[in-house]
Image 1 (cartoon, rainbow, N blue to C red):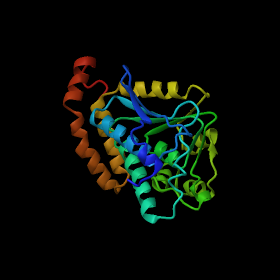
Image 2: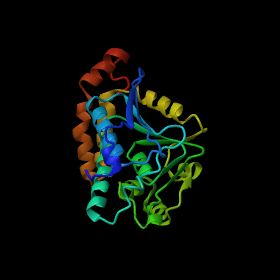
Image 3: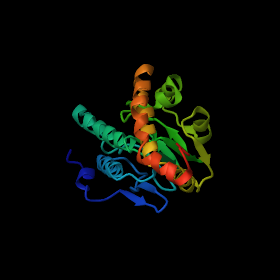
Image 4: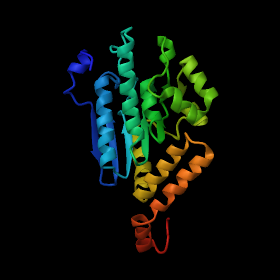
Length: 261
């Protein structure tokens, strides 16, 4: 790791996991300075996501607090013209976001305030996004002479379409929560101050579903997105029988033959 002030503060924990009794785990980012995603924070997000993948809850909420989700990358780390360091930072973003995306349960980003740059890229790595009415979401890197390097150029077009994604990336302008809902960037807009509760309630409802079926369905959808249709259908067919067994037996025992399957 580069010898930066942020790197030297690696013993400080900015990321925590709160496992709740309803099967929901809240992955919380809490760093002074608008939750800037330094390489240290990104490494901690990756470690937390790996922990959740190894011992998955029913569902996960990613939250940055009531004031801000994340402003994105740490400006002090981008004050460089060293391509090797830029590559290193980009790799940390990709590792953290890919780890969140790989959590084998539904994930929901609970967005308050701003989710910009790398902050939005983190939210894009989740399955769903719930935004407060006051939220602002955008990829502002172009205004710094850069472009999104934490997955934004790939995940955003898959979510909102290439034209809308290019407009957001090329202009660097944030969108309101209402506009984000209209274009499919977020899935729910809720009153300010209720974002975590709304996301946690949705997560709890998802956590009540069969864990094996959720995991396999997520694998089928995510894995199939990058495949031709015929290959995606083959992936679905390969995964489908795995839903039978413990999950199906539990369904038969608890709710009658094949109920909820």
